[in-house]
Amino acid sequence: MINWSVILGIAKTHLVTKMKSTVTATLGVTFGIGAYITLVSFMTGLNGMLDDLVLNQTPHIHIYNEIRPSETQPISRYRDFKDAMNFVHSIKPKQNQEKIHNALPILNYLKEHPNVRGATPQLWAQIFYLSGSIELGGNLGGVDVMEEVRLSNLQDNIVEGTPEALKNNINGIFLGAGLAKKMSLSVGDRVQISTITGDIFPLKIVGIYQSGIAEIDNVQSFANLNTVQRIMGESENYVTDINIKLFDIEESEPMARRLEKQFNVKAVDINEANAQFETGSNIRNLITYAVSITLLIVAGFGIYNILNMLIYEKMKDIAILKATGFSGKDVQYIFMAQAILIGILGGLFGLLIGFGLSHLIDNTPFETDALPTITTYPVNYNATYYFIGIGFALLSTFVAGYLPSNRAKKIDPVKIIRGT
Image: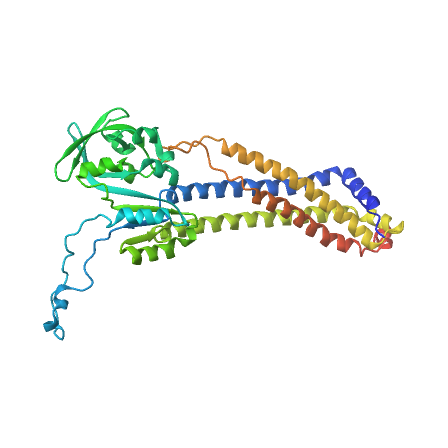
């Protein structure tokens, strides 16, 4: 029967008496795990931030009325030309409104759907921004601002003002940051909006909106939905877009196809809208995990080399233990116990160092005009990475201790004592 108290006592004595080797082995584990935690936390945090910048601004399903040429050309409808060769082509699509037909019933249907977290109507209009002699073309989006705040990251992109200020002002506007800079306007000023028909409406700037994408901030602004409907001279049911957020994003593609058939609209799911971005995100994640795994493997080899040298230094101790009656199994357990103790100590210190460095990065200032709401570097404190770290520390030290200790149990003590 194995006397674990004796084995652990001897293992502890070996570790204490050879403090230099013990510290070196422990530090090998500590810095390996610490570097892994720091790297994976920072890289996954950065990837998450980039994903959020795009995905939070993209609905899970986007519904609109796509104006496209008729699949059946007019000449094909005449039976007299059924067997003839038709040379008439490229018939332009008929005049049609951009609004979604039956938008309000569609919204009511979506709000009652069990997988729909929210559906927001929008009206987008091409306009001109006027300020003195400055005239800039752009887009004005009519939205339900409080629903947009609930379902997207609109509030995170408001650098001045509040959503409530827009909701409570029927003549208010969130002006794009690029537009505000070009026209030297700020919160409290007025900007004139001109439609493509020449009608002019003055709106009060109640907030500045900055998405972080210059092409958007230079042309895009937001107002209340009924305000834009009034500017365009349209009724309350005039809606050009419906954005949908789901509870289960995996259902976005099949649900988009069902909505197209059910309501005769164009529905674009989030995967279709962000296919290129999704590819880039997957590649970044692949690089992150590849680098992290490589780092752990390199740390494992370092741990193995250190423990192997530690056992090599203990050859005479092994001979004495066997000469005094310890079996080969006992010797193996002693050195494996040392390896596990080093793994536990080094792993815990590694987690602390990794957390400390991650916290330091998380509090390092990071300011850029492209990301107004980001003030520090992003870090992901996912507990899974810490469990992986301590798990690998124990696994690597177990393997690193098992291989040389398995060799140590087969050592002939007579040869060692003789020095052969």
